[in-house]
Amino acid sequence: MVWTSRPVKQIAGTLRAPGDKSCSHRALILSGLASGTSEISGLLEGEDVLNTGRVMAALGAQVERVGDGAWRVEGVGKRGLQSPSTDLDFGNSGTGSRLMMGVVAGYPIRARFIGDASLSGRPMGRVLDPLSEMGVTYEASDGQRLPLTLQGRSDLNAISYTPPHASAQVKSCILLAGLNAEGTTTVTESRITRDHSERMLRGFGAEVKSQRQGAGNLVSIEGGQSLVAQETIVPGDPSSAAFLAAAAMISPRGGVVVEGMMSNETRDGFYRAAALMGAPVGAEDIGTAAGERLIDMSFESADLRGAAIPVDLVPSMIDEFPILAVLAAFASGKTVVKGAAELRVKESDRIKAVVAMLRVNGVAVEETEDGFIVEGCAGNVPGGGLVETHHDHRIAMSALIMGTAAQNPVSIDDAAMIATSYPDFMAHMAELGADISEGQP
Ligand code: S3P
Image (tube, rainbow, N blue to C red):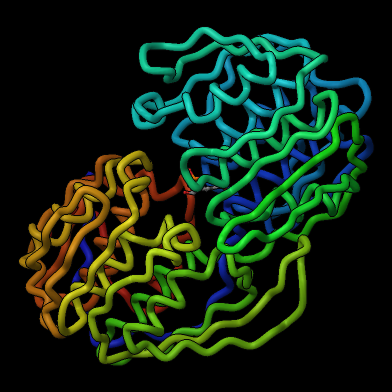
C-alpha cells in the first residue's frame, strides 16, 4: 500500500524516544535465561522484538505482557532451555535470529530458525562459522541462510575469535554461546561495535571483561556463569530518534526535543556526523537506565553542509545511513560515505536502495562499492518520486522524512514494515506536524 509524505512548513514538538530495539531484544533474551522473575519496562513493542519474546516462550521461558511496554519474564534458570515444538520464526530480524543462535548453541536442543524473505536472504555464515568452531552442528539452506536447523550442545568449546566484519550481532552471538561454553571465550573487534550485550550481561550478574585496543576492543566471558533476574528499564532508541532529529534539521521551521534517549558512544555516530554537517545538537543528562546514560536531545533547522563522513564513525551509525543520505540531499556540497560495505547485507542492499531513493527524487548521487556520494541540493530537494522500500523499514522512514521538506510529495511503495522497529512512527510524525497519509499524492 502506497503512503505519501507532503511538504510542511514546520516540524516541531517534544516526544519520548521509543524503546531501543537492540536493548529490547537483549532484555527479553537475558530475562528468559535468568533464574527468577524479571520485569521489563519501556520495551519496544515492534514486530522484531515481539518475535524474540515468542521465541523465548517457545524455548520454555514464561513471557507475559503486563502493561504498555511492561513485560514480566520468568526465566528458565538452571532448568535450561527446552527443545521447541514449533519452528522459531524471527520475521524480519537479523538481531533476534543471530543472537538466538548463540543462545540455542549452549543447550542440548535442536531448533529450526525461519524468517521472512528479507531475512532468508541474509548471510548467517558469520555466526554459523564461529559456532561450528565451538562444536555446534547445523543444516542450512544454500549459502548458509535461513531456514536452518541448529543442534546445540551442553559441552561447547570456548574459542578466541576475530570477526571479519565489525558486527555487534556476531560479537553478541559468540558471547551468549560463551556463557555456556567450557572455558573463556574471547572476541577481538578491530572496530568497537555497540556494547549493550556486555553491559546488560553484567547487569544480570555475569562477569564480562572488555579492554579497549586502539579503535578496537577485546571482550571475554567465562563459561558456566548463571544469570539472575533483574528489573530493566529500556532506554530510548537513538536510531529511531535519528528520524525525528533529521526531520527537524531539514524543516524550514524545525524544533524537536527527544526525551529519554540512550547516550552511548557506540551508537552516536549519526549525531556526530550531523554536527559535522553543521546541525546544532543539544544534549542534557537526565540519568541512567539498563547500564546506559540517558539524555534529552534537541534539534532545530540547520543550514547543512556536505561532509566526508569519517570511516571511524561507520560502526556507531551503521543503521543511520539511509537517514544521513536525506540530510546529505538537503545539504550544500558533496557528502561522501565510504567503508560501509556492510550496508549491502542489511534488511535490503542499503547502498542500492539509498541511491535509488535519492535519484527518483531528483538528487544526484553516485553508488560506490562501499558507500555513496551525494551532491546536495542546498535545501531544494525536488521530491516527487515513488520510493521502492524493498521491505526495509529504515528506507521507508527516511523517504517519508525527505517528503516533509522536499518541493513535492515523496511516496513509498509500502509502510507496513515500519512496525518492525518503530510502530509509533506515523503517530509521532503527525504529532510533530508532518502530513503523511495512505495513498498517492
Ligand atoms: C544490532 C547490530 C547491527 C545493527 C542492527 C542491530 C544489534 O547489526 O545493524 O540493527 O542489536 O546487535 P550488525 O551487527 O550486523 O552490524
